Image 1 (tube, helix red, strand yellow):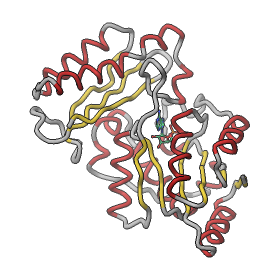
Image 2 (image 1 turned 180 degrees about the vertical axis):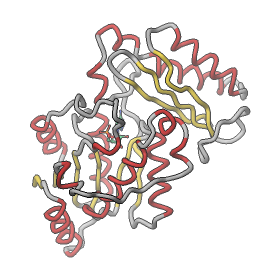
Image 3 (image 1 turned 90 degrees about the horizontal axis):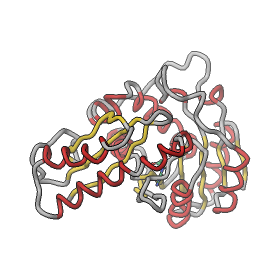
Length: 279
Ligand code: AMP
């Protein structure tokens, strides 16, 4: 596995791969890798000849009062995991290399980004779109694998790729969970032991929604009330809990088309997100 730390060198390597007829698979991450990330690398290997993993804690997608400095980083462990999982290239640029002095161009998606995490984290998706567009120009992949865990990010990036004609196919990978149902996340490390136990409430509330939906319930308010009741038994504070149309991400009151139920819950140590599609 080659480790590359400048965009120029990564582009050079990508050109060589393309010239030799190899398909490039790409897994963008912020590091502190867990089994969820590794599942994306394995999927990328199925679709491509050469797999590039990027590790970049993107300052542009963090708000001023968010956890940029505290975000967990462990490059040595990540490098070992990437190697063991079969990545061919690890792209690990510095913020200075990614954002040159005077960087002044930003990409904003203006519809899907305005709700859910976009509403509670202003500027977040502008940072995500900008960095992923840059990474696509640097890595030039045929296939990019993204996790369904970040459902809104997946939909926003699909829209960006569609609307700006990026020549890349996006593959969505299912959410990998801990044994008790908690979605794996680098931020789970921030939870206190008591909060870690309570954090299962996110997936439990989604299970509740799925069970109600399966039993024929189509009223969004009733499903949301049942979900809220699960969270409110814990010390977690609901940041948002919504049922939205899976295509437009606009709130729905009756579940007639596929709907996305998504929530963010704040614990003292971390803000966690999870989601499920009801169809
Ligand atoms: P992150 O490092 O958190 O920015 O995530 C990098 C990629 O891994 C994104 O496409 C995420 O959606 C995906 N991802 C994060 N957690 C999981 C998980 N538990 N299961 C599957 N994919 C995940």
